[in-house]
Image: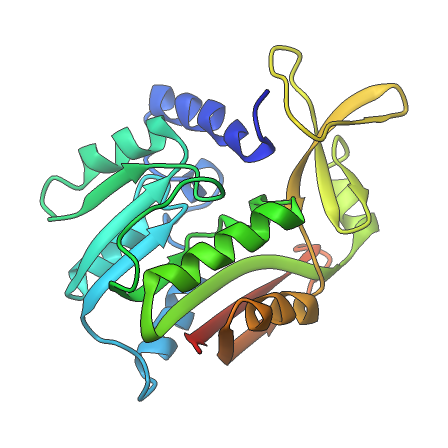
Length: 247
């Protein structure tokens, strides 16, 4: 039985077949969210931010942000649970000295402890809906970072406009702070729920932005630069970008 975030493997398979090179390019004109890129530039403008050294991106997908960081001069590592995504990342990164690894960061040890100046959430943490798995991921982040190393979180969050979300994505369901997707008939996932006679699997954790900051603090990561973007009718889920320093 698969964990919900393993569903990405199917999507990357479709992308590879269609020649789509990165996650955002499925429905956006860019492969790196400009909002995230601007936030990273602001992080690097801070006196406590590293400007070189080792960086690891967790949930790197096909590697657009990992390559962006390599161009900045970092020695980069990318990790993702999807074998297809990593294969696509390697194919697109031949001009770079980047190490890629397939791993489930909720259960496996990745990277060398205390070796990284920067750890980046490649918009994967909101795909981890289990509280136990989220704690495991953030413990892994803390283990990977050097003292005073930086973790950059880029996440969906609440508040959200549920009516607007339902109009845009009528097949999805929201229970408490988790968005559920319809379960494909050919796939079996853990933590599925039956809603009105149909099965759904948990796909996105949309906790309140203040609760996300509390998660980081409990993991020994002190938020030091925060950018919150509140939901709008055309973008019914809020977003949170945080740079947190390892305590």
